Length: 352
Ligand SMILES: NC(=O)c1ccc[n+]([C@@H]2O[C@H](COP(=O)([O-])OP(=O)(O)OC[C@H]3O[C@@H](n4cnc5c(N)ncnc54)[C@H](O)[C@@H]3O)[C@@H](O)[C@H]2O)c1
Ligand SMILES: [Zn+2]
Ligand SMILES: [Zn+2]
Image (cartoon, rainbow, N blue to C red; front, side, top):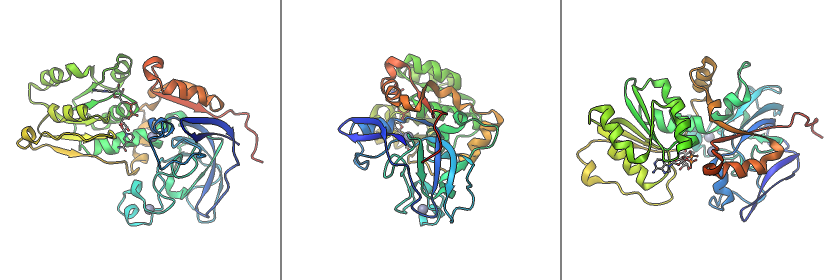
């Protein structure tokens, strides 16, 4: 098969690799039909993720059709159309039993695809713990409608909206309108906030944010917008979806007394917590990674039409054009890219 392989030293290639084979009786092999690129893939290429070894096939967001399952797999069957969760989970360790599937401590659990193991930017992929690591796609939905449930939509929902305990009628601010921030805005609708305010410096991203949020403003205008919208009280919830000290601090400024800040961003540098101002404000701060418990809830919302993830797709490529797709995705200021959708060439023959 062909696959996108990380070669180390900023290099990647679309090259021939051996077809994946079953290694455990809980595995499945799937034929990929859509995949997409995540900011984490570009971090890997920049050499920023030491866990990922050169020679690894990248990609942790994808959908496909199951072509083979092991004898221990009972829920997933050949022929099923499935979404790959970005984290695999054994379903049996202490973390999995508590519902923290993302923290699965099994050697084949946690971030496997395009991380510890080969990923889904390929024609075929091996999925460990298929029963717990794949979500079946209901018949009427297309792969494009659900592929963002592999990672970004679930992250926005679980680490943003659910941890912040968003309530109906609240004022919610999302700082950052990249794929994660936009996904968070899309799923915020499930909790009917009175006002959803997006904060983003890029004009092209503000335009996309305006499809999901009630208002999309620059960072400089965020405080005045929130003050005006809330009569000076502050936002009930501020969600950080950038990963910078300044945006985290702005979240703490924008929330009301007793408000909630949910941090999603990955921070590479220390952040100042302004306790000299916050000690009396009584705010709550949450952070973390997704548990991947809510895929089914979001599937139902997509099925009903409450959420339309396809608004995130700005560019489309065939899988074998993936090098061009990386080029477009890694330069959003020039290309306007949010998510690039990669679709398998339907002329791929049977495996051999
Ligand atoms: N917690 C998790 O499990 C998890 C999972 C995935 C991604 N992340 C992190 O979430 C963050 C967002 O991911 P992404 O893929 O959307 O990244 P991205 O870089 O594509 O988007 C970030 C957005 O923030 C905007 N931005 C920059 N400075 C800003 C400012 N001062 N105010 C407002 N917006 C500003 C940028 O213009 C960009 O649109 C990253 O830090 C990523 O590593 C965390
Ligand atoms: Zn990702
Ligand atoms: Zn586990």
